[in-house]
Length: 114
Image 1 (cartoon, rainbow, N blue to C red):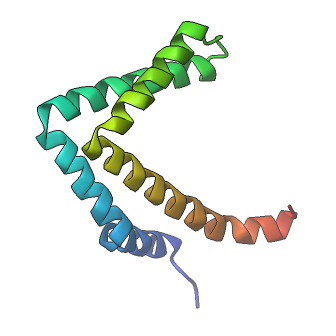
Image 2 (cartoon, one colour):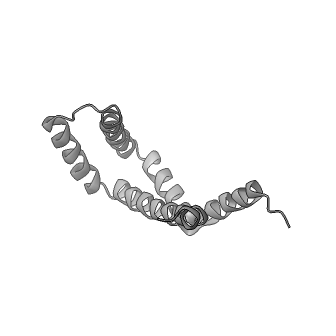
């Protein structure tokens, strides 16, 4: 019996959307977006993150000032309860996605070896 991988993938998508981790992430994100000051702070934090990641991907050096700015932003956003809750939910969802990726990649790892 042939398995349609795309049907399985869409089934996994549905399961993710129905998971507790996704539901908590979605609610936490909505809570941050409903609070203007938290949203502005979170958007700025994300922009700083993306700027640093983009520099890293382009092989550019990240200055000490940029590192310090990022560290200050992390400390600041962690003080905001809504953003902190969102970041925790993102981390949990990221762990789930990582574990699912391990399961999905297992046949290839077995085929090619670790």
